Image (cartoon, rainbow, N blue to C red; front, side, top):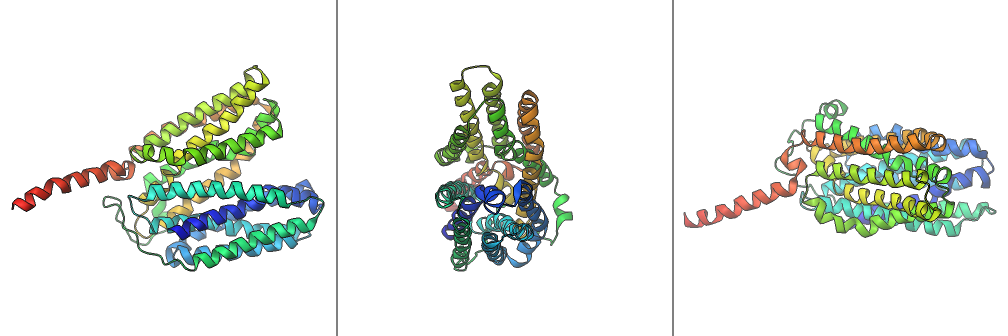
Amino acid sequence: MRRIHVGNALSAFGLGFTVPYLYVYVAQVRDLGAMTAGFVLAVFAVAALIVLPFAGRAIVRRGPLPVLIAALVTAALGALSLGLAGGAASVLLSAATLGAGQAVMQPALATMIVDCSTADTRARAFAMQFFLQNLGLGVGGLIGGHLVDTTRVSSFTLLFAIEAAVFLLLVAVMATVRMPHSPRIEDAPARSVPGGWKQLLGNRAMVRLCVLGFVLFFACYGQFESGLSAYGVEAAGISTSTLGTALAANTLMIVVAQFAVLKFVERRRRSRVIAAVGLVWAVAWAAAGYAGLGHGSQAMATAAFVSTYALFGLGEAMLSPTLAPLVADLAPAGLAGQYNSAFALVKQLALAVGPAVGGPLAAALHGPYIVTFLLFSLGISVLALRLGRRLTAVQDHPWAARSRVVARGAAAEPAAVEA
């Protein structure tokens, strides 16, 4: 598990190292224009959507570790070629290779966490994963920003070469992992018949979770770097430096709050935790509305806007030990990779659609933008409570189920001794 967490941190570090500077690299440093730069960013999403349906089946058949190593090698090749590419075609092909590799890492690592954890430790393991991912993204972006120089192509070539080296280092670390078989919660679905997308779509609870996941990612992650930032600049008069502060507040909230909220979240019904996240994010959108539409002072608008990102971070910290373990508990034995890949695919779809819808709406219609996503956040709460009706007691509230099992075991002991 320690090696897997190192893998999560290094993969996030590699992602944060280069992705924030892709647009500048393609449009300005390689002088390929804004159109090509936009296509490069779109290629990342398209590549993920293409490979993820196949990644799930590969993880089920071959295991998560070989798939992860293949993804890391692919991403390393993509990163290295992207640093050397000079033309539009080579840049797009390199970006597709890098994007495909990075997309497969997420479900492979998530499945490894499932296989190396128990029902008791899984929530904490995924909380640690999310914590390290955000830390890796932040540190990677910080170091990458100090290395690049828009007047020197060689600085970006070095950046991508270091990213490739990080992925290859991770290959060496992962090659030392020996995967155990994880025990599962007793009352979870025990069907282990080989199946694919048809079986997954027949799981009503998983389908509902995917719909809920799409709304979650669309209304939050899909707005961070597009609609919400455009709204902040256009409606609230937020400067780019303040936008950077808001993003830092989001990361800081996750780092500070992650383990503080973990014990609270672990002992609550998962469906109610997700419903609470919807309410927290509704407050966040209300704060954003005040920042842009409240006609207060600029200082108050800035504080409200930064608070919006911080509240989103609080919701993310509540979700990290909740969503991924729930996906794992809904998966029949041996199909965790398929279910993780399906959920990652839903996330990628939301991240592709979110900016396309939110960006233009935020720039042109400030009030309707806030109202729309405030309603989406309240919709998260409704969908979460409806999902709770489809979950078994163990899937929705594993802590209480384990407590009852322990209590019954303790009560049976004296009788056994007496007999």
